[in-house]
Image (cartoon, rainbow, N blue to C red; front, side, top):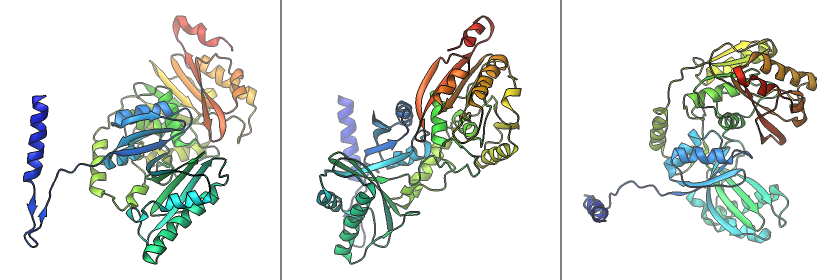
Length: 421
């Protein structure tokens, strides 16, 4: 108690002694510690990733972390907002709530939006856009909500300044999120801009590319930590490979991204951002195992190599043209496998034969392997001929999917994995 009181007195005294006198105006100007205020934020994510996102935020140093449905709320300062956008692997957006009010009709909405002093966040010569989501009996059209909110903001500027900011859907200076849940309207600033799955490294894709956030979440759910060899036997454009390498090396998920929305905000602090970025990059680590990808399509192999190169990870990832069904495990020791096989939605395959071949190849060629794959065709799992030790419900886009785990044992446990469902 004594030391706590002494420290508090010392800090107050020290702040007082840092008062500076302006020589020209003789005005007393306080020079105090730079203490950034904490505020609430919301990280949006996919269904099933909430607990992983909680762990990510806690490891980054977030405070008051609370999971919700497809979202996690937390607290931090401006620097932490920069860090969250840079480092979170399973977040789609990071929102900064600024106001909440009751809303029952059009007039409530207009008045509530106008009660915010928008000059704090926007100048008349700047641009903005509104993203609206609605889950309410009072409103059934998100476009109407966005237009009415836009009118409230524009009218406020026109009444005060005679000028009005413009709407820019592609490159706005400010992206505003309006969310109506029953009788409550929450207004937030979107600090991310484009969804955080736009990492910046993937310039070439195939027919059915997996979302980068979905890929990262699958890897984290699978327990991938970079402590053994890794393989994606149907790698497509290389997203799982790239995300696996970034996790293994502890590289910030969005280090290759060109821009975040907060870089256009009025309180943008480039020096602070640079310090946060440098701090995160100092925590990267070396990876001493192999990451290998196969694909039987030459075009996919070429695209995957391009994307890996864009992510500056070519030293860690090897990609080969090969049909998974003709391969077998090359290395000794444990092997971690995660992949996204086709399931008949966009690629024409003989479903039963294809999934039976997956099971046969795992069984015969990959002992000592922990294999995970996602499928949007839940019935297809019964053709694999192996009993999954775990099945997790996820969504690939709007399609309900299962993320299934198969443990391929060596030695005396071999019989366990050949048991059919």
